[in-house]
Length: 453
Image (tube, rainbow, N blue to C red; front, side, top):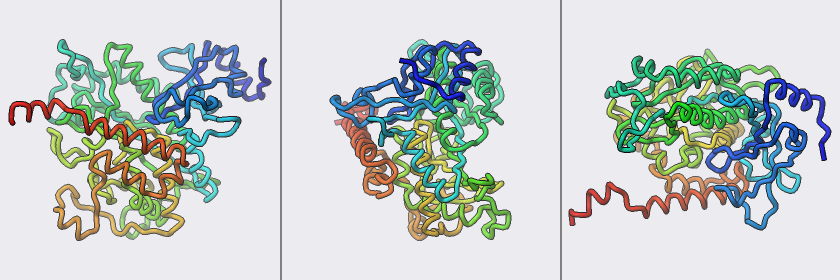
């Protein structure tokens, strides 16, 4: 039975059809932030928008349902409609999950929307920009992952122009697709790992940015595959190279005027950040270890969060729970122009909905409680001794997934943000991930111990 569309939805359907779209994807994410979907012929668009597509949550990672539970339904967001740049016959929709006619408590997108509603009740819009780092690789004759370009071999390849030019055709295809969708890419470059690239594009409201980040990972993998390569969003694919971050650049704006409420050129601390911005920072620092479990969500993530280990020197990844000015050795950095806060602990494997929800909730707590983070650190924090760090009261970020999940489980903010279903599911799933890794016998152990004893 056909549903009756509103004039706006009918206009959207007509527009998609006029552009040659034949199918629509009702898409949502699992616990990892990876796309899951059903494909619907455009002739059934009406039903899809009314929640016709059902999914068995128990078949997916971290969707807390039993096999006997009623299926969850997708309700696509019409504002997220995106025609696939590599296949114009298909349109993608970010969707919210519903259960028995109500928002599903453990829907990642719904979790972020709940915290955004809390911010709105305080008069704020949460603006977010995410820097996207990733590796574009191919397999050599032995099946080993290597850079696409044979010239991409420098010990310090960051900003290497030949390395960028050798990959220009496929990297610019990604960039042009982003701009075709109105994302406004303002720079892209070769990063500090061989085969590693970064794209920087305009910030927007956090829900739209999380949708775009989710789609970006899907798109980059598909475009790379078309060229016979592959893209990886593994945080640390090579032990001797920098990992791939997803730095969150954040600010709060007045919900009525759009004014940036984090900007204050007269800031006595010299960072051009408002009191509200400092309160936000203090809240994030209070809950940093729990947040880390979500923005650095894998075993591999913690091989990125080290001070050294890159052939080119420092890893550029944070190690301590601290903030500073335009100093990249802090977890939270206030860029030179002020007016925003950058979280450098987030990596490219994060579920952006859950990561943004945790950080925003922590920042709002800091604002409600008028917290102050103290003075910014302007020095190289990598060079501080353990004694100096102790004297300053600075703690380490979690050093592995187990520590992060323990912190997440013991922090009252986690369940408040996630809801009990996702909170328990996240702890159980990630604890199992750690246990499987911890009991795995690695090649390193075989090489070191097999004939040693």
